[in-house]
Image 1 (cartoon, one colour):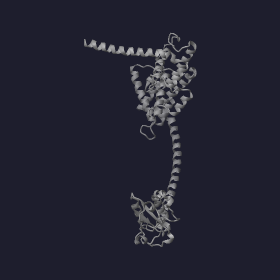
Image 2 (tube, helix red, strand yellow; image 1 turned 90 degrees about the horizontal axis):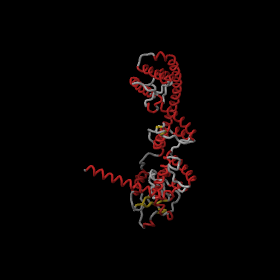
Image 3 (cartoon, rainbow, N blue to C red; image 1 turned 120 degrees about the vertical axis):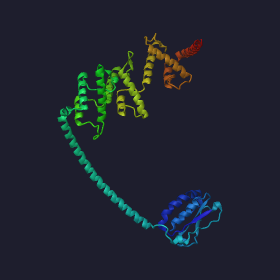
Image 4 (cartoon, one colour; image 1 turned 135 degrees about the vertical axis):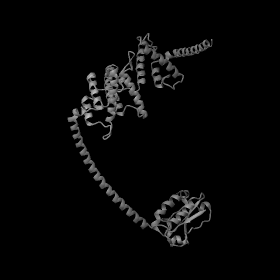
Length: 446
């Protein structure tokens, strides 16, 4: 058991020790707060704070009880070792004899560290230096801002002068004998033949934009595509970069109607087509195929769906932005294409039930629409799986929401018998596949 006593002969150091002692003794004080009477100013400090801190640290490392004796400063003279206890914490509980721990005489008289005045003076000097550094930095920043404004003004003036000279000398510069000017003349000829200069690195994206050429022309066209792609890369180079385009080249291409961002242009073209299509179709999304042929607009919509999934997952390869998503939302783009198709077919089945009194819509009784009949048949299988609790995959089962909608039109009545029939057919098909496999193995052995 260990006790510590301190005397009140240095009120200036009180705050320094109060926080440490209070934090260390808080747990013990809380445990017996009712029997602990601490007078005002009872916990005080000593000149030799460092020495007392060592005693506190030693006591704190003890896992057994730690007792603190608090002394009344009015009964203690500086340097007096006969300290009179006012309250002893922990004696009632542990029943132990305690002794006042008095600092050695040299601890009373010897200053083991810098005084408060020395510390404060040092801080004031450091504060003065910091203020001087701040004032100097603010002055330098102000001068830098002024230089920046002047530099921007000068560059703006110089840009205008460069562009003016480039505008007046573009034909002369294009007449110089170099590779870039040679390919530019090829592009001019391409526009004369095709009516535009939208040379695409991937011509399969829109085959109608380029005419067919013979083999020699195709070789030249491929070189033109490569050159055009490099031009767009060079245009993104920062000023001063070796590949940065000269001003006259940019002016010449702009005059020709060069498309600097073909991907963005193509997106806007398809967006306008989709906007018009949705107005005519009443909000119905375009199909992927029309008359067994790929429908470009429907294919493009699927690409947007794929890009949207990548965008949501945070993948950098997603060629779509929040701005484009907002644009598509404004024209009624349907992101859940499968769910929308199901709702459309459900509404049609609902009308069929109202007309015929049942849900067994087949090609023979629904206007020879085989695709709709096949959809109904597939829903019967999904409904039967849902009834049996197979709801892990939407590919083989209805969702709870879909099943509830089907129940509203009595769809389950036509599934109770057909569902078992479908399962019997599936089992027969599987058995047939197994039998055919055994027969094939037997024939191979023969």
